Length: 265
Ligand SMILES: [Zn+2]
Image (cartoon, rainbow, N blue to C red; front, side, top):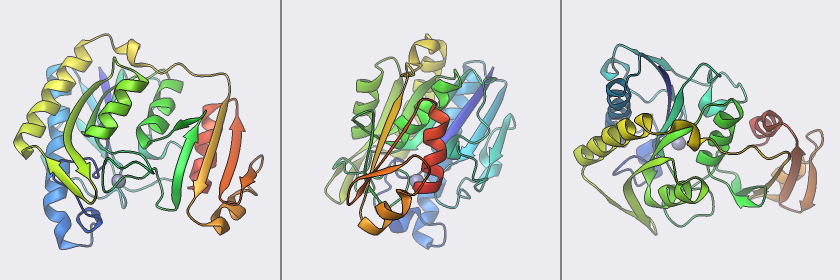
């Protein structure tokens, strides 16, 4: 059984401020340790549930955060950005049995995590077929379009609630909750324990029920913080400006949505 893990940092327990998420800053050392620990916990859960091969994508910022030596020997690690449209899910294909998202966070314009955002900082808000969109949703559609279910998500409580709304079969582990610029976190060791157990349960469950139904057509609305960005990206082929800060892009194939986001976020 081949398992894919995409790991971010803004939904890792304890992580509260942007300074803690930047590789170049000394404050990022502890968050990187915990991001690694939570990813290792997901790997351990996957191995216990029967995984034989695990591909891990370091999916935060520089994509050079995870401490490779701590991963199990069955894992291979994807670092840096190829700029393939799958972005945070690079190298995912139909051969994977399931995908796990670790350290994921609430969407842009959410008040549930001080580090809430969707893809790029310039994005104020993103809607996919009318639904406010998180990186979880962007990537769960990417995986589902390849017939790979996202079966487990760990991150902040706001995100876990969103996951349950989208598909209640997907397992979740909430490791912190945001209020204003503060967070309330569970203990790092409790977080890793919950992630490991959650992954085991999710992989042993009815995985295919976690697939998101793929609609016949996608309408993506991206609202930017600056009108100048919206103006620029409205020149992407097929895109149009719907108000001074919003660009609409429509496509039948989800990959075209990902291709747009690669250039416009
Ligand atoms: Zn991130």
